[in-house]
Structure formats: structure tokens, C-alpha cells
Amino acid sequence: MQRTIYTDAHRQFRQACQQFVARAVTPNQERFIEDRRIDVEVWLEAGRQGFLGLNVAEEYGGSAAGDYRYNAVLLEELATSSAALASCLGVHFDVVAPYLTDLTTDEQKQRWLPRFCSGESVAAIALTEPEGGSDLAALRTSARLDGDAWVINGAKTFITNGTSADLVIVAARTEPGSRSKGITLFVVESGATGFTRGRKLDKVGQAESDTSELFFDDLRVPLENMIGERSKGFGYLMQRLTQERLGSAVSNTAHARAALSDTLAWVRERRAFGVAVGSFQHNKFVVADLVTELDVTQAFVDQAVTAHAGGQLSATDAAKAKLWSSEVQNRVVDACVQLWGGYGYMKEYRVARAWMDARVSRIWAGTSEIMREVIGRDLGL
Image (tube, rainbow, N blue to C red; front, side, top):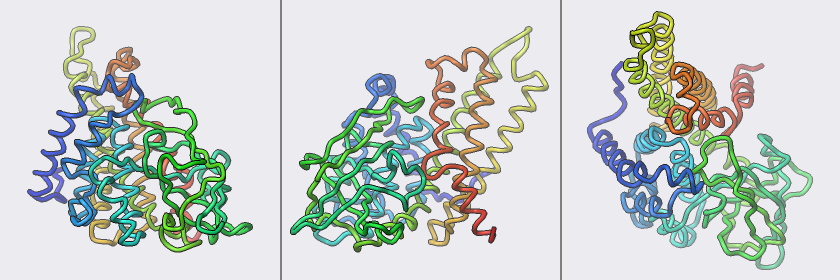
């Protein structure tokens, strides 16, 4: 089915995204995986192309696109190449950016956004804690006011861009004894005394994604590094999770489509018993189901993108898009591995990496179980 949500301008932007990936990523992807990091040059090139500040005002170095569909196009092209690439850059331009544009003062914008847009400063957001998981209201990292600074103590884990980040949005409890009403957001800058990074985590998939632990030991954060209002952080997080979950859905769908495209080419060419593997009725039916399921998923995700671009996407519909796309993505890539046979289990083939990379999408940005809880509550259950 033909997709209708993008204009000629979006299609031209997609070509620029594809050229960026072909030039800066594809020739170096094996090295990124081996090094377990994405080179700084990728960030700088993305900045030069205007990709990192899509929704940042021009006066702060951004592109001021003013249309979420450009975010979606870029996420699709990054995820088609590498789920890890979409994750790392997506956290920066799609997840962190709204906090820095919506909640900051003019002085803070001037201080942080130009280098954010250029790729000279890599951004991360630190929410998850070793004992907290999906329960953001139960976080233990604390911040207490001490003269001209906030003193932060605590730990975060599973932080994308954690090792390389120059700017980290940290959620900390400023009202002891409270839950959601006592959380405040801060920007922690690299090099600050008391801010240390733990090990780079060894994940099942997305090896080139820089994921680590962060520790705060009597870290003094200047008063001017608090963003938004005191104790309103939980509300800020909930408001912006809608876009984060939609971005995940966009990436999930594009990632699965790339794996399926590779698999279609494989089953047309790979032969067994003298005929193409795809010509066997069972395999033909499997592929037909995968294509149909993915096309239907794409239609819902596209509608969600359109709604969000118009400021009308609900948190519940974002949860539906994230839940369904991640479940479909994992079913599709698992079936693709089966169709590839033994080759599908070899890391040298993109389908094997896609299978490993996809598993986390049912966990991050809220687990599938949390998404079902969000949807169920909206139904009055």
C-alpha cells in the first residue's frame, strides 16, 4: 500500500538521510561494532547536515523544521541501516531535544543548544536506576539544595550514549518521602567533580550503541542547570514519553522492514531441492503473513506520526504504536532468521544482527507490559 503522509520535501530530505548513512555509516559499520561505539565524526557530520537540531530554532544553530515527520524520516533511515544508530542519534535529536527546547531559559539555550546541534556535544537522558526499572516515580537518586548548588547522589543504568555524553538530563528526587510529585530535572555536564561513568555494558545486541552506568557522588550542580520547575519533573517526563514511544515505533517498523527486504531477496535466490526456498508453499505463506502484518503496522504508525505532527497524538495511542510495533518487529525478524536457516544465525549477515538488536525494543521506553497497563487504564480497567 502506498504511503501518503510524506510530501516531496520529505522525500528530498529522505534522500539526504540516505546519502548521509551511505557516506558516514555503512563503510564504517563493522568497525563501529568492533569498537562498540559510533565515531565522533558521525555525530559531527550529522550536525553539519542539520539532522541533530531538526526542531531547534535557527538562532541556536538548529534547522527549525517544525514538522515531526522529518524526525520520523530520519529515524526510519537510521533504523534501516542500524537499530543502534537510530537509538544513539534518536536519543539525542528526538528524545532529549524537546527537554532542551521546551524547558530551558534563553541563557540555557544559548549555553547548550549550539554545540548540541553541531554534534560537538552528545546528549543522553538518565532515568532508569539499578533497582527501579520501569517505575520512574520510585527513583532513589536524590538532589538537595546546598547554597549555590544542588548536590546529587545516586546511580543510573542502561543509559544510551552514557559513556560519550557531554550533556546528561538527570531525574532526581528533590522532595524526600514523595513519589511522582518530588522529581526535578537537571543537566549534568561532563567533567563535573562527582560525576563518574561505570563500565560500558556488554549487551546481547546493538554492540555499537554506547550504553553504560552513571554514578553521582556528592555531585554539585549549579542552580542554573536545573531545567523546568522544581518538583515538576515527573510531569515533564510523562508528557515527552509520547514522542519517545512514537519514535521507537517508527524505528521498530523500519528496522523490521529492512530485515524482511533482505529476506525476500534471500528466499528468491536461495535454492533447496532444486527450487527457490521462497517457492515452497509454507515459506510463501510465512512471507505473505509477514508482509501483511508489517504493512498494517506501518499504516497505524503513519497515522500516529500524522497525529503527533498535528499535536493530537494521545499517550495511549503512542503506547499502542510502541507495543504493537515492537511485538511485530520481533516476530518478523525471528521468522526471517528461520527462513535464512543456518546463515541466519551468523553475525556476518545483517538478519542475525537485526534479530539480536530487536529484542530490546520490547523493554526500553516502557516494557510491553507497561504499555498494556497504560492502554488498560485508558479503558477504565
